[in-house]
Image 1 (cartoon, rainbow, N blue to C red):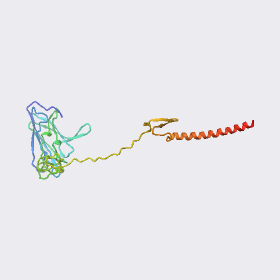
Image 2: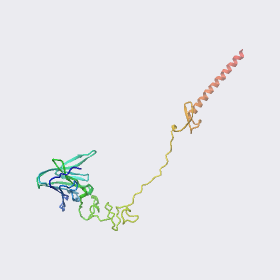
Image 3: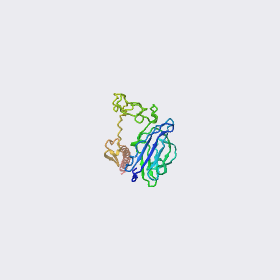
Image 4: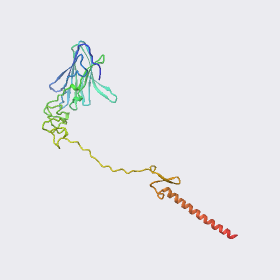
Length: 294
C-alpha cells in the first residue's frame, strides 16, 4: 500500500497497541510515532503479541492518541487472518474485494480533538501463536482525504509469549518465538541450528553441527519403481504396403497367405474356376454329340 504520508506541520500521532491476556496478565505497551519526514512503514517501532491461555482468548485492544495541533477525523483498518477468530469488538466487520477472494478486516472511525485519545476493543481467539510474518496490520487513515497516516510493519514487531515453563507446541510455541519456555534443541518443530551440544531433533543431520551421522532428521528417500516397457502396437497405416489383392493392401510383415482378403479372394476364385470347368466340360460333351450326328 503506497499512499502518501501526510507531511507538513510538526505533528505527531501516537498509537498505542496493546496485546494482553483477558486474564490479569501484565500488559506491554509500545509507542508508535510518526512525524514530518518519517517514511511510511517505518513508524512502527514494535508491539507485543501474547500467546493465548487455555481458552486462547486474547485482548488485542489498541489506543490512538491525537498529537496533531488540530482535530483529526480518522479511519482505522485492522486486518484479520485465518488464524484469528473474532470473539468481540466495537468496530465494523468488512471485506476487501480482491480479484479471486475477499479478506476480512475491522474498521473503526473516530473524531479526535487535539490531545484526545480513543480506545478500540478487540478480543480474539488464536488457533496458533502468531509469528512475525503473520502479525496484525493496523492502518490509520485521514478519513477526509483518504491519505495513509501510518501502518504497522512486521519487521518492527517483537513477540512475547506466555511464560509458564511449558513449551506448548499445540499453539505454535518454539525456541524462536518463546525461548523462555522452549529450550534450544527441544522437540518443538523448529530447527535452531545452535551449537549447544545437543542434536536438534527438528533439524536435518547436515544442518545442526551437533548432529552425528544417523542423528537428527534425514531426507526421506523417494521409492523408485522399474517400469516394464509397454508393448509397441503399430497400426497398419504405419506399415509399408508391398502389394494389393484387388483393392486390399498387403503390408510388409504380412505374407500373401496370411492376408485374409487374399484368402477370401482365393476361395472365391477357386469356386468360380470349378463352375467354369463344369460348364466347359458340359459344352464339350454337347458339341461331341452334335458332331456325331452329322
